Each structure stands twice: as structure tokens, then as C-alpha cells.
Image (cartoon, rainbow, N blue to C red; front, side):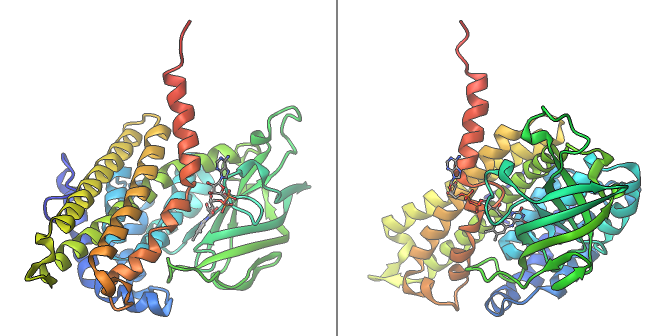
Length: 401
Ligand SMILES: Cc1cc2nc3c(=O)[nH]c(=O)nc-3n(C[C@H](O)[C@H](O)[C@H](O)COP(=O)(O)OP(=O)(O)OC[C@H]3O[C@@H](n4cnc5c(N)ncnc54)[C@H](O)[C@@H]3O)c2cc1C
């Protein structure tokens, strides 16, 4: 990539990984993305290629067969992939969040059981928190687990599972107040369960149904589904971490790294929109000169480039904080908020530069225009990011008397 969105201080391994992924994106993703998107076709060949590159195990420790890389490396890989076609980054994102939750909150047995097969991509993860009645307001979930002897019985309906059909391991959040202090807050009365299932649609294991794909305006190719639990019986070993009442915090930890990931996706799409706009502006002639030489268009490109650069730098700052072991809820919220808003704006500017052709399905920008809005919603809407940012910043800037 040229001058924009460079990252200082990468080691040789990181550079090598990024160069291999960039090459893969340019050769195997960009040329087929529009066709697959218009057909809403699952990108199986691309997913197989990413498995070979080791992307599914990028952050999983080497002792479990992964590459043991940092969140920064992961985010930069996601940025590259989203530059090619965002849904492909969606295929790996929920997998990555579930692997991250297992790495940080799973029991030794759960790690041994799943992480080696997740590193190869044989087991593929989905992350299920949202319900038909709530997304932002996580505390309002109604799905529940009831203890029955040594087992748990789960009932309830989940919504918006990215990879709901193609995954084989779903981490889901439910209410479960048995074994928890009755006076504890609602946040301590939730648990995360690991549900193994077969891929596909319909009844994928007794008591668990994945209806068909939800039809979406963009973000096609990757499957997004509902999930119905109706007397789903799980064992106590399927409770993440082995202890009830920790689910909310485990999920929030996963979402926090997920936010850096969504910021990285926004950076990738914005970068691609900029590249397309810059190219088109130099080729399209109006009034006797390339439109890039009209000041209005040149200024638009300047604004776009500045936003691409600012979003990238903020995203890598948030990733590096997490890698250093620091709290990064403020910075990942800021990165997600800024990068997704800038992405929407850069895509719209590139669309405008394309004139009427931007409205044609033959042009890549038409697809980006439908993909960018998803980033304003997923992993917490812009309003929710602002709530997090304001809450944290007011803690720091509290007036001391
Ligand atoms: C394509 C796609 C894929 C997804 N994948 C997943 C997934 O894999 N797993 C998963 O669990 N979820 C997933 N989601 C769900 C996503 O996380 C939620 O849609 C998102 O959190 C918003 O929740 P909601 O849709 O219920 O909107 P709501 O929470 O109902 O919000 C509606 C509007 O009200 C605003 N609002 C809500 N509360 C407040 C408040 N307190 N203050 C100010 N404004 C507020 C919101 O910002 C928004 O504008 C996915 C969604 C989409 C569209």
C-alpha cells in the first residue's frame, strides 16, 4: 500500500504476515468480491485459503497450534481483508471473539478441547448476545438456563448471529441466577454457554434450531441468522469458565476486542473507497481536465485521505494498548466510533466522485456504499460508543473538591 495507513514499529513476522495477506486479498478476494456479493454466495474458496494462511489461529497461542500473534497483527490483517471484501472479515471476527473468550476465560479443559481445532479453522465460532427484543440493552436479555441436576436446560430466542449457520461452536449469553447471590446485580446473573452444533440450517442438534439466513442490504456472503433454543440440554462443562454469573463480563471483554476489529474493518473499507475515488478522479475528464484537478474534487480527496489516516492511527493505538495489558475500553470505543463514522463519510465521498457510475452495480463503490452502514451498528452503535466514551472520560475529568 502506498503512503496512507502505514504502521510504525512492526517486526519482521508481522510484516511477512501482512504482505502474504495483502497479496491474497489482491489476487483472490478483490477480483471475485463483486460477483460473490451480488450472488450472496458464501466465499468457501476464500475461507479455505485463509485457513491455509493460518488466519483462523492468528491470535491463538502456539501451544494450541496457533500463531500466537498480537491484537495489533490481527487488526491489521482484518483491515487488509476488509479492504478486499468486508464479509470475509465477518467470517473470522466472531471466530476470533469466541477464541479470545476461551483463551481468557475458559477452563483448561475447554481450552484443550476447542482451541487446537479453532486454530486450524475446523471448529468455527459464532458469538450470540443479541435477541429480537434487545441489542444495546444487554441486561434485558430473556433467554435463560435452568439447572437440572448436573445439566442445564436453555430456552429462548437469539438474533443476528453472524456465522450462525456456518459455525460449529456458538458462545451465547443467557440469564442464569442459580448458584449466584440473589442480591447480586442483573449483570452477575448471566452466564455464557458454549454450544457445539453441526453447521447448516434447521434443527442442528436436539433443542437447537438455526432458521434460514436473514436477507440483508449488504454484508452478503456471510450468513447472519436467528437461533432458537427450546429445551436445549447442555452439561456443566459447557459453561464458559465453569462458574455461573460471569457471562456478562466475559462477553464484554470479547466485545472490547471486537470493537478494535470493527474499527479495523472500517479502516479497510475507507482505504478501498479512497483508492477507488483517487483512481477514478484521475481518469474521468470533465470540462477538459481530469476531475481531480477541479478543486472541489481535490479537496474531497484531501478530506478522505485525512480521515483514512486518522482512523488507522487511532485503531492501532487502541490495539496496542490492549496488547500492552492496559485498559482500552475508552480507546477502543473511540476508535470504533471514529473509524465507522469516517468510513461512512469516505465511502459517500468516493461515491460522489464516481458520479452516475457510482450507482451502477458494476462499480465496487456501490457495494461499499451498502456495506459501510453495518459498521455504525455492529459491536455497539455510535450512540452506545458515545455513552462509553463519556462515562469513562467523566471519570477522569471529574471535578475534585
Ligand atoms: C449484520 C449484523 C450482524 C450482527 N451480528 C451480531 C452477532 O454476531 N452477534 C450478536 O450478538 N449481535 C449481532 N448483531 C446485533 C448488533 O450488535 C445490534 O444490532 C446492535 O448492538 C444494536 O442493537 P439493536 O439492533 O437491538 O438496536 P437498539 O438497541 O434497539 O437501538 C436502536 C437505536 O436506539 C439507540 N439507542 C439504544 N439505546 C440507547 C441509549 N441508551 N442512548 C442513546 N441511544 C440509544 C441505538 O443507538 C440505535 O440507534 C448484528 C447486527 C447486524 C445488523
